[in-house]
Image (tube, rainbow, N blue to C red; front, side, top):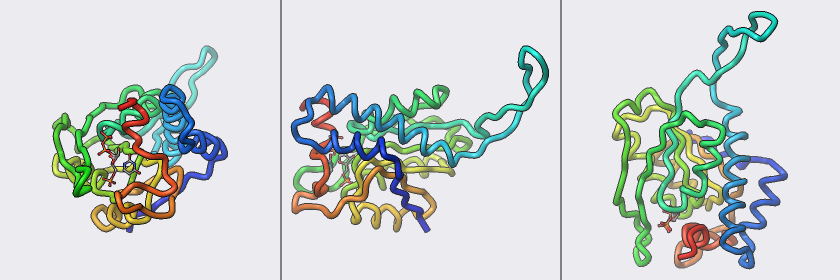
Length: 207
Ligand code: PRP
Ligand code: URA
């Protein structure tokens, strides 16, 4: 059964209010998404397994911690790019595999157009980045693709999730935990999230 977690963090709440505001400029929207990705990265890394190792301080040998696994970050193009820098800031050695999926404006179905996924993915902990979980079609497709290529351990990171998207994703990928900054009310007739923040890709890139 999928675990769905809305991260309880005061900074996330204030930053998300800036993202939602239609008066927020493109540069501020982009910078805020970047800050949100940093906060979410810190929160989500709490749950990842560590191992101990010995090293030398200037005075003696001591025991330190490092992550047990290596990471793969998979931003779903385009809006997932907005979350990339925060995760790379804290996981700088992560492999980055972009996955190109766009949602058809008329049918709202996801269309795959690009990916670059390494063969050694089986050993990597994969973090799928997609700020909007609306119908859930895009995130579900990206996760299926990573699994087809061999991914075994995955986490989905969204900023704003809709109940419909959480349901669809959980049914398809019950083994993949979802982390979000907010669970919104519903989708409108055009499958946009309400209250939402609009079209995340357009607001990041000014299109
Ligand atoms: C947006 C968003 C998600 C997707 C969510 O992408 O970035 O990937 O919609 O909707 P879904 O859950 O109903 O699939 P979009 O297709 O607008 O592409 P873009 O990021 O390039 O703007
Ligand atoms: N994609 C977006 O960018 N926003 C929504 O509300 C739904 C899908």
